[in-house]
Amino acid sequence: MLRIYIEDNPEKQRIMEICRKEAVFADREGCHFPEDLEGESPDLAMFRMEEEKDLEKILEFRQSFAGTPLLVLVDAGISPEVYIRPDLQVGGVLELPFNEDRYHEKVGEMICYIVKGRQEGAVPAFFQIQSKGTDDFIPYERISYFESKNKLIMLHFDRGKWSFYDTLKGIAAELPTGFVRCHRSYIVNAGHIRRIDRIKNQIVLEDGDRIPLSARYKKQIYGALR
Image 1 (tube, one colour):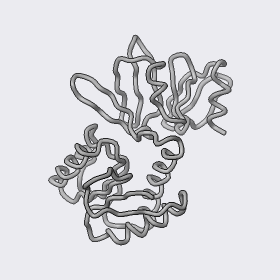
Image 2: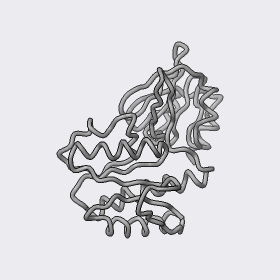
Image 3: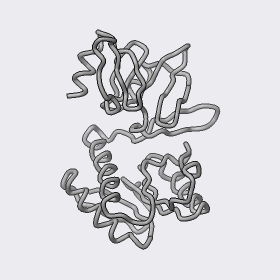
């Protein structure tokens, strides 16, 4: 049973019905919609942001529920710079006004991600980086690859790069299924692979980046893509 918290809004009943349909499609589980955030952490939370001041309630939620996937229904006039930030950890965005097809697609995508995580052993939705007294969280689905360079790990994701001290061996145990070693200095998210260049022994990612593929790891990469 999926616990989905939906903040009160004019589209709440229609969104609840979408959730029910998509949950059945994903794994035939039902949905429970708690009226408040007391008790157990929800599997998914949805908030509406019509004004920048609405950011405060979402930040308050995130302080209590650090790992819950978050879907924000946002007014098109609000800049993404307001809500795409490390401490908010937005997993998905839907622009207002309500659109049945778009909402079905995005809600279904997030529910499938949650169900997949459960099937793989309740894998956390975010990669955590601890540095200088802060904890930053990046959704796994937004990470394309990790690169070891000059005693640093470079995390490459859809908004750029993030560097921190660690080793590939050290982080490999934390990563969910789908992250695969492809070279002694690289771990790639198989979900971001567009094609394999066998002539140059390179992996071509969805964003156009190319990373090396060692003969030693080819079997693992092709196995992850099947």
